[in-house]
Structures are given as structure tokens and as C-alpha cells.
Length: 181
Length: 181
DNA sequence: GCACACATGTAACAGGTTACATGATTTT
DNA sequence: AAAATCATGTAACCTGTTACATGTGTGC
Image 1 (cartoon, rainbow over the protein chains, first blue to last red):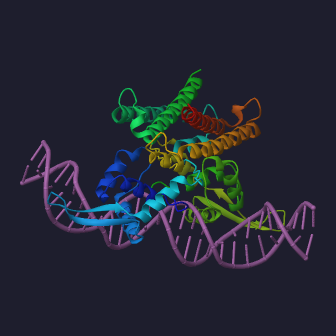
Image 2: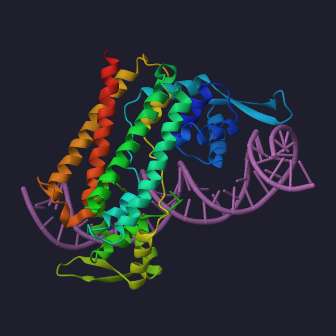
Image 3: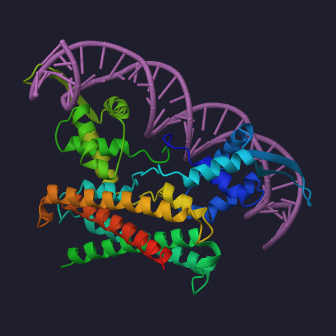
């Protein structure tokens, strides 16, 4: 939301790791970052222009090896400064997670509501699927043994996402068990 | 977000439980619902007008007992229909939870990054505080024994919120332990 | 009398989604 | 030849935040 604009930080953070095109960034959001952040490509290109006008990134347009014209962005000293200041700051935003299923539950007052069973079963299916997807991601990115050294922060948050999703699944399982007693 | 407008559903759900003024709704968001949804009063009044123009709620303005003029809203048959259809539907949105701390971690590659320790300690403090707040809420709303019968859905989601926050705290504790080894 | 809670709105703006738009290259 | 992916943008619209605005009732 408006409140705190974190997209610039994500873009600066990704560009710091090496020059990127808008399309590169879009791809990263679809795979790696997609687990915990989402954004549309239209927004990315807009924000890149804005960061450029703030002189926090620089653009290099041309034909790099192939035939397609691309615009690569690189971070400037100003951009690095902004990124580092943000990472070291403490005023992290605690946003509420807007979960539609949880909201529905709030309006179900009775344990024997006939709609409850179906909603729970469906949510369980979805959440279980997401959990498996996250576990697979960990295997792909960090291998079977979980080599956390090579990218510590990323390992930690993937681990966090899995544990959170596991907790969600456990919670649903317990409710379903109680329903069937 | 634009994506899926859930505010109308929340308002309909709350108004269905009995006539409410915009201010009543604002208060509910500040306390009960505040744990898992947030909205500003300006948005509430706007949305109420919209629901009224859709004939999903009806307004009754006047002086009720006291001297202050209030506008009470009541749900209509059309509103009930929309609400019930939503609750019974399966196409729940799975939104990503945009957590600023988690995002920062993503950009910390090295386990021995000097900034890590302070960030972890601060986040631990905040999350622990939130966990205690949630536990207190459960005691206030459902008592020491946890009488889940009186408002099943609400009990479930408060329980879910507590378990999720507990998992967050455990995760941070483990990282801190590993840091100090 | 003053502060705080009650009570209801409007307006400007920022951020994000959806749709529109275009064209090149690679894969099937 | 067609479909998919690469690659980059613009425009309309909606939601939500922030700020502005106003007035009443209650407790100290």
C-alpha cells in the first residue's frame, strides 16, 4: 500500500547484485521473490524510470551481443547509500496479512455450520499444495542437505515460509479432526 | 489492493450482526478485527455509501436516545445474498504477506553480516510483544479456559494468529542461537 | 474551560491492477 | 507457420492513505 513504498528497495537490492533489465527483474519476481512479494511488470518499468530520475540507478541502452535492444540498469553511489540505510534501519512495518479464508472464518459463528467442512477441505488442499511447492523450491535452490552458507538470508526466509505454511496446514488438520469427532 | 475488494464483505458481515454506524465499524476495526485487517475511517464511510447505492444496506438517520445524530446501517436481502454467496465460494485469494523484515533478510547474503545481530534482536522484541498482545486478547475474549463454543470462527483465527506468531518467534530464536554459537 | 471520545465526511495523492499496445526472437 | 517467450512501455481505473474539516457530548 501507499504507507511504505518498498518496491524501490527491492529493485535497488536486486540491481546491486548486478546490472539488470526490467525484464530480468520481472523474471526474478516471478520465480525467486514471488514467494514473498508480487508486482506487475508495468509497475517495475515505472519505478525504474523513477529511480533513474532520482539518480539512484543509471541506464545503459544498447544491443548486448544479440539483436534485441535492452536497457540495463546499474546502481549508483546514491542508490547504494539509500539501500544500505534502509537495511540498517529499525522502523520495520508490521503489516497485517489479509487472508480471505481467515476473514470468512470470522463470520462463521457456529461450529456446526454446514459450510465449514467444505471450506476447510478446500483450504487444506490449497495450503498443502503451497507447502509442497515451497519445499521443492528449497530443494532446488539449496539442495537436499540445505546448504545455507551460500545465501544465508534467502535460506532463512525460505525456511520461515515453509515453517509458517506447515503451521497453517497443522492448524487446518486439527480443525478438521475436531469436525469429524 | 485492487485485485479483490473484501472491504464490502467485512462491512456486510458486521452489519448483518446488527445495525451499525460508521463509527461503530471503525471501532470494531480498531479492536476486534484489527488483528487481521486494517482500514481507515475515511474508507469505511465511502464504502458504506457505495453499499447503500447498491441497495445492499439501508440507512436510518436520526437521534437515537441521545442528542447526537447518527446513521445506522442495516443489511438488506440483497446484501445478505451477496454475503452468503461470498462465504460459500471457494475462490479464495492467496495473497503474499509483505513482511519488511523478511525482505531485508533476503538482501543479507552473509551469515556474519555485522548488521544481522541488531536487526534480529529488534525484530525478536517486536514479535514477542505482538505474541503477548495476541495471547492477552484471547484471554480477554475467550477467558482462561478458552471457551471456543461461543464464537467458533473468531476463536479459530485468534488461535491461528497466536500459533503463527509463536512460530515467528521460535524461528528468530533459533537464528539468534546460531548467531551466538 | 479543556481534553478526549463521539461522529461524519471531503479532497488530494500515491500505489497497484488491468487492459491496451507493439515488435523481435526463439521454439515447436 | 504458429506459438511462446523476450522486451518495453502507456493509460484508465480502483483502493487506500494522508490530510483537511467540522461539530457534539462527556469527564476532569
